[in-house]
Image (cartoon, rainbow, N blue to C red; front, top):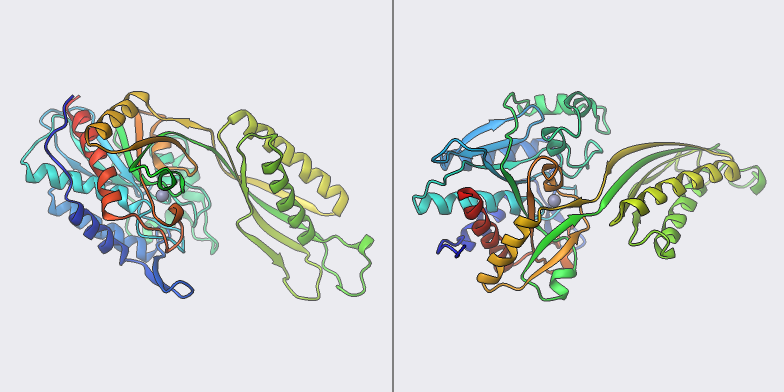
Length: 416
Ligand SMILES: [Zn+2]
């Protein structure tokens, strides 16, 4: 299929990213940069949601909200066919940048603007969407909105998840007015544009990334119970030090990653909190999180089993109890080859250097891949592709390249 002459307006796209990035913006003292703190279903998230909905309404999209708070803006097609769904997320981690998620949602809106300007009605409906709690930072389960919309997670189970203050997802949705009743669309295909959040594209001087799949991800929350005691008087052999057990878990995870026994495994202890947390008290408790990722489901399974063995060993050796709970678990995902082939052809016709890669991060598209053909295009990022950090940055040209691939592939799928 030849390229159409339509292109995104890169300045307009960039202006909308900057504008949305004002919402929840904060000054990062160490860097002097502005970051974004827009945790899911907070007042800041609600404000950003309403901003996008008002842009959707300006574009005369039919806006609806589903029971988990996912928002859809529908551009009618000339025929009543299953829609092409384009979406991502607008929630952020507490120390986020302005591109993560938002660039994908706003690129979708930019496509609608281009279609409106060209006075083109696609054959299929086009739905632009954003999904609740993609980051998993507030309620502990990532890709929550898209997982519910596609049936991997039950609505009741999602509603019951709580944040640190005991507020449930359902209460939070209600508080910001996003407890919707619309049903999620049954799409013909799903497309997502996202920043790479890694260094591969920049290092290879590639202008866009074509994503083949996503790593398997497994999160655990651990509560280690030991016994608090005097730091000076308690002999080593009598200690039941929850903090030490936590440290051994972290060190063992690194050893597992570097051993090569589990392929390309990555592991992170991102939260580690001691109780009571005093200089001269042996920790009686430690709460920590374990994030493990792998490109290979089999190796992931082995790592999970070996971690269990490790926990049992630490319970015996350190005299602690380790309560563990899996809070997120997704297998590796392969994206649709047909869509990727289209993306590759379109990128080449646009004169862009495209590179195929696996995503190290989870994305909404992986949930939608279970119900329809799905594809993801990555925008290259500066600063080693850093993300979840105020230094996260993609140039206007980097955003434009990925958005034009998204536009052209969308145009094809809207007529298919
Ligand atoms: Zn994201």
